[in-house]
Length: 627
Figure 1: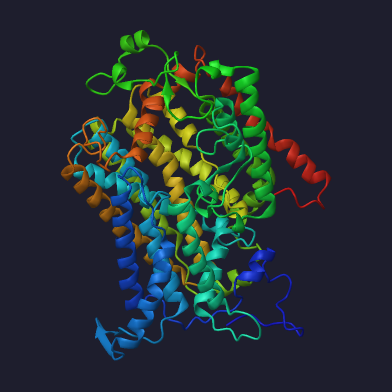
Figure 2 (figure 1 turned 60 degrees about the horizontal axis):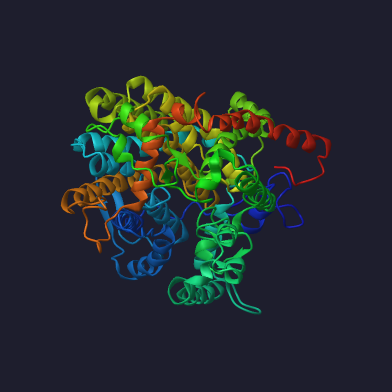
């Protein structure tokens, strides 16, 4: 079903998407009669979600963490779904007065999409597990707390569902408008269409044949950088020419230096941190590239070799380790009390903590990035956001996809509000019942919720239009570290509720936009995302709790066997962050007497930098290089 076309066979210009990439990829038709929440969808969706969250949680504790993406299940369930469609009985059953069929017909694209939505919950957040598991691991394995299982369960579920509540409340701003096009979803749409749509070949390969050929070729090629020739991941000609030069290693190494002149022939290395460049718009790639060159090729070298900023030459140019004033690794055990609080006399005796120059400057860039994000969205999108707030989308033009979605029952906003208020209430209850374990008081929880609410919309606007998600992890930990110094667990939990809930919200919003493009009924999306979130949260915690209790000395590198794979490097980073921002605190590092106090000026600089860009966009509106 689709709105009527003009005599020329095309939709009216004001109905088609204003984004060219969307017009080229996303289908502008729909068939509301296609079944979605079938038995096959539920069975394969819950199974995919469970398998992914189990494996990702299990492997995240290893020395070399492994993340299995939802794409694996997206491809694997297709033949399984078709097999079920050909073998399951087709007769109807009556359950509670409603007709129910195990096999309503051929396995269709909407079932496939909803299964992928379930699977995405199994991948959860970034590294394949909820970040809250990182905090729980730090509490149990590093701080040796006897954490209550009920408290841990609330931490996991409330952070996930809180993000879902934020997502639901922001749909009108980040899903419905055609300008919020979420570039990364277009690759998913293309894959679904390639797997399901039958196209007649006139010349060359069909979409399915093209996909299969390149999938096999990619699989075969990865054996080179992945196993046979790992040097292909980072090829540095500077290091080849001067293999014994420390300066050459600092400049050219892709692993331990700035990577100047380094090439990568490994797609995993290219897309590891910023995602696939193939789905990002040109102006976004250009801005990231210019920023990277300015930061890595100009600012960091000047600070290191020219000005020796922060005594930079005492330390490696690139390292996330903590150092003493002499350049040795900082031993945090020497400044801890038995209760894992800061021993101030021991800290003053042992000496200040130092960071590598790149690490310190990256923290400063995080300060600038936070305020720049708020200023950018206020200048470029503030008027639209205000208009949408006032009209609640009643008078906003809708493109063809939004019009097609009007054929389905919408999810009432109070459904999401119940989840949001419920998760906030349970979080506050936890801060009273287990206040010694979580360290974060009720007002700290409310502060975290307020921070997440303020920043989720502007960051969502940027991700929905540029495929880049500015982080503010540093800001969240910086703020609470100033307010509650010496409380590392409180610092971790504030980051979870004030920052990671935003990450979850944006992941849910991205999936909602995918459902919008693929014409999945909104209530089916609500059900799948909520069910997947609860299932993945329960399995996530169960697997982590089992491993923390059954593997002796897990995460304790000094006590483990030298060949043990359970060293938890990922969570060691989380522990180190709790030491920097929670235990020692930003006041000692960035306060009036801190070595890195001048980095705080980057808050102001970041707030100012978007202004000239906005002015240029007004002076030269015909230029499309401005977002």
